[in-house]
Image 1: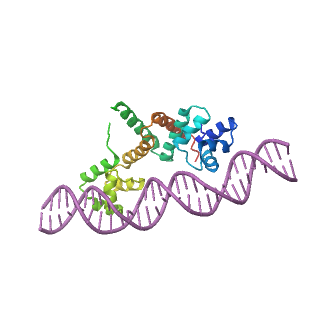
Image 2: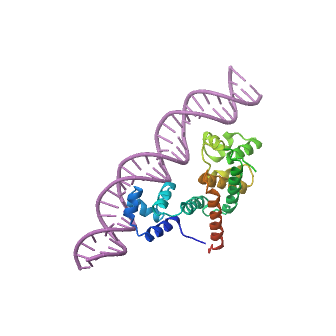
Image 3: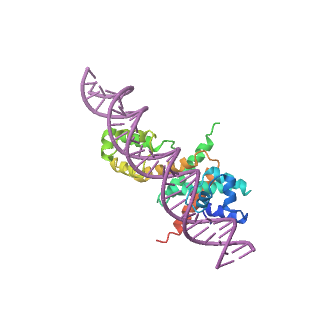
Length: 103
Length: 103
DNA sequence: ATTCTATTGACAATAAGTGTCAAAAATAGT
DNA sequence: ACTATTTTTGACACTTATTGTCAATAGAAT
């Protein structure tokens, strides 16, 4: 399985597109330093930035978003012994909510 | 399935034990106001408080901790469409980590 | 009515997250 | 080796979140 972080993946994609941080950060309208840190996991990525990057790199946003969310989840359960159980409970809740979304 | 929050469950347990907020908050060494808000979901619970409460109420800490963690997870994926996918990815990661924990 | 219990909101203190900038380090091109 | 460009690093200010303290209010019980 992929043990790559979202930041690492984004860097990889950027390098494949041969875009310097400078250009991408200009498109994102954020400082080069911040983007650099985001790619190296020193600063958090936001959902908005992830979506904009998917747009810039013309890649599938879903894959990036799932990775983004899963990293946030992993951060919460870090090295908790009960992490797996908590995940299963959360899954049940999500399914329950989905079944009862009376929109 | 149980749609009860951790705070609600803790209040229920406290009432079953017929303990006033005053006494419990003294044992926890936190302000009554904060505990009141924690039970009603207005303030976040910490892992430490949850464990102390399990001790005070002499109940199984695991069940409370799982609920505690699952709520933190739920908060991260809120109403994300990709929440369920992210949960599955996180589960794989947890299993991967568990299999490779070379302590 | 008085006492015990619980809730609410205002406030300060602290911590966490974010943006900006400039200098230093690394890399690439000539 | 020199210069350009790109990337990294750290310091700083600024904003936002979180947390604790307290007092006033409301509710419940006797």
